[in-house]
Image 1 (cartoon, rainbow, N blue to C red):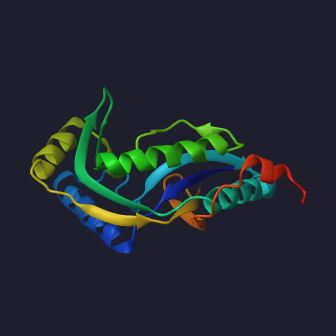
Image 2 (image 1 turned 90 degrees about the vertical axis):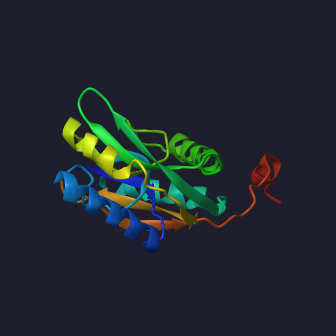
Length: 192
């Protein structure tokens, strides 16, 4: 049976608490909204995997990728409010320097996946609320228009999550960045 998996970055607990407080504040004005109960995270990608063998392949790949990744000092410093024809999103966005570090990391991970990815955003963000109707989006604008944001954290790992029910993901594994140097191609091919 196929399951949906998500590879994500979790900020530290203090950042998670601040994002939860923003979600709570938004909910007090708008009522329920999408992502209301999700923990703060940056989604790298989502994929479907069938069975234990594909899951073990994903874990092995992530372990290998994280061996050469180094910790990133990230800052999310502004709020983005977006609307399309159907609904809206409120999210926290990284500063330019952090975005320039996150996008290549996200691209490396996506590109190396051997399973089909679920279409999603390639722009790093931490969602506060999604699937907001026009009224909720208007209230969110009023609420957050003058809010100053400065959330700093060290990204030194990624997590693998599985969708437990129709809406929520649960962490099933984490992969720590080890910062090992990449081996040159000729060393990788050499036996001695």
